[in-house]
Length: 154
Image 1 (tube, one colour):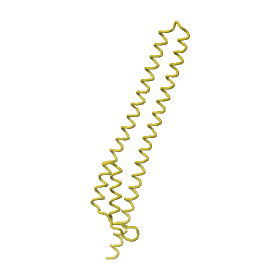
Image 2 (tube, rainbow, N blue to C red):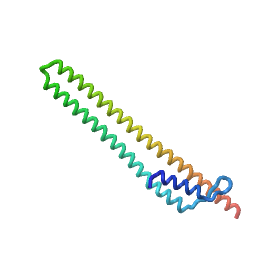
Image 3 (spheres, rainbow, N blue to C red):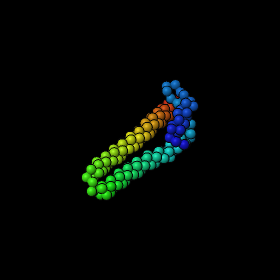
Image 4 (cartoon, helix red, strand yellow):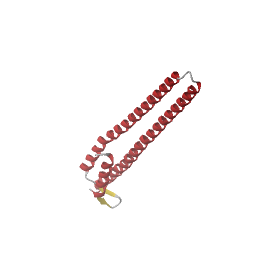
């Protein structure tokens, strides 16, 4: 089960809870603890996904660098083969520079897009976890107040 499903489950548990005047609710502790346990197990999965994305980004960057190196090597090889014709040499140098600049721009774009994606994923995860934490803390406060109220009534 993914993180969003577990958060939806918590919201459903909250909706099915017994509502007490004063904004308080009673929830099934066993169900709540089970969902909480699943959340604890799911968060590392989400982190692994983030790590895989970061690894994929590094692989893409390495591929872009290797491609840029291959292109540069090919351009250098072409340059050496055509040294007798100055116009061809100049054109090859210019094309090699263009190719290298293009490859570097593509690598920079990929790096930026990958970073933005990872930051966005982590931001979404953080927001969901903060919302869940607030809900858990609110539930704990409610249960603590009910315990205090029932203790003072005895």
